[in-house]
Image 1: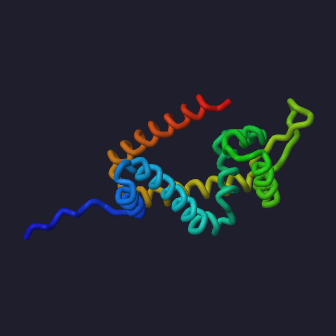
Image 2 (image 1 turned 180 degrees about the vertical axis):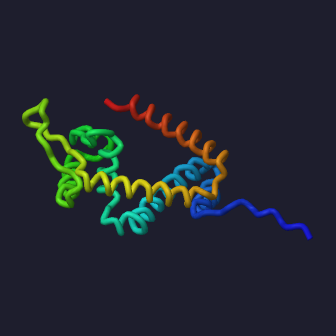
Length: 178
């Protein structure tokens, strides 16, 4: 007996694309297939990360993002708030609130900026570094489990394609910014 080949995978975005094809047969909704999937993946992965593996560590997505930005910066694991602002693309007020919350938890500290008397530098504390290291190891391991449905070749291809799309979007953003 010969096994039937599995059909194409279906996901929640297929219904949207089908509905637009029905309602507006004069336009091809293929871009929605890409954008919708990217958005759904991002939302679902962030929610899963926070609810399933970051919350037990006492982290929100925002606090995780902040301590990782500092950890990723290398020794001495510190950045100015404006650097955090540029890296995270949040408003300066959101960055300040994020720093305040993480500082209260003891994961970062504010120190005077020796090059600017009015400025501060945000430095990862030893406990913040330890938490960042544990959190990123867990995060990468969990993402590996999720992305394990892709072969190595598929992972490389997807990475290349997503990088191409992101570079195009970022280039267009740079061109249109005043």
